[in-house]
Image (cartoon, rainbow, N blue to C red):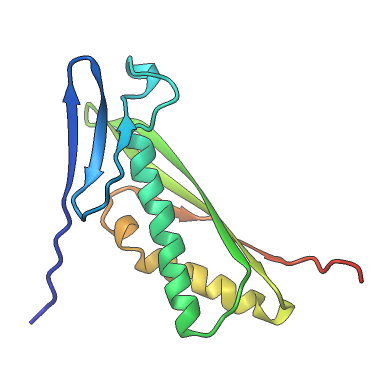
Length: 150
């Protein structure tokens, strides 16, 4: 039997209180959000657009970390910046392209090619990105960690 997983989150708004989202997994954390300022929302708040991009970025980090552990690739860090392009299609705004800019720091030059392959594989396997109809573009960078002078 195929595994089945279910995740639940809740978003709420009450007059005179900020909107918030909360995951229903026992975590006490809530996250305030608003529509983007360009659509009448409050500046300085998370937006649904930012939350979607954060989900893509965190999924890529988690997938890469898991794959790296299985392949025994050691690396000091990974940082992923995500840019989402929103355009009007068929009369509605939607994300048409999501550009992933992961940067992996490696400790050995001989790990560069393997880290690049794992980034590409992680992008293809990322559950969140695979679930979206947007074009996903990977612009990976693998950097050798600079050694401090002795």
